[in-house]
Length: 105
Image 1 (cartoon, rainbow, N blue to C red):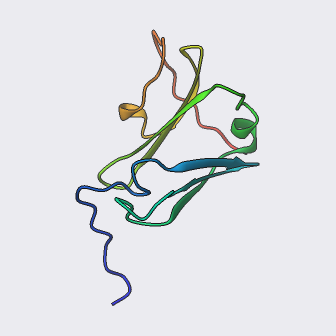
Image 2 (image 1 turned 135 degrees about the horizontal axis):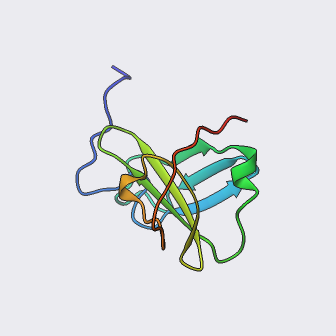
Image 3 (image 1 turned 30 degrees about the vertical axis):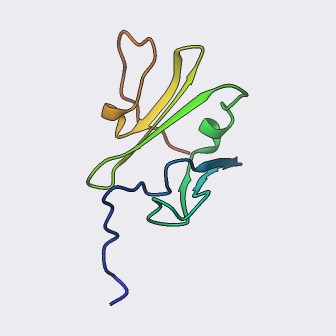
């Protein structure tokens, strides 16, 4: 007891219309209602160099894979600013090619 997996059928991790808060180096996604939400919130850290890129009207895409992998991409004016993690299922904007880099903070 206490370690049972969260079963998510017909619901999202934080519901269908979550609130996104980016505070310094942390991304927090909060459920705005209990309907269709498996949990109240989700928190993930970002490198400080990445969090400084965010600007008004940017679009942050987040995808959670079936095996709990996370992918993030940030797009401004249909141009990819960055993509991190499991990026196979997040939009990459107008990208002709990409290069893999290991980022260390």
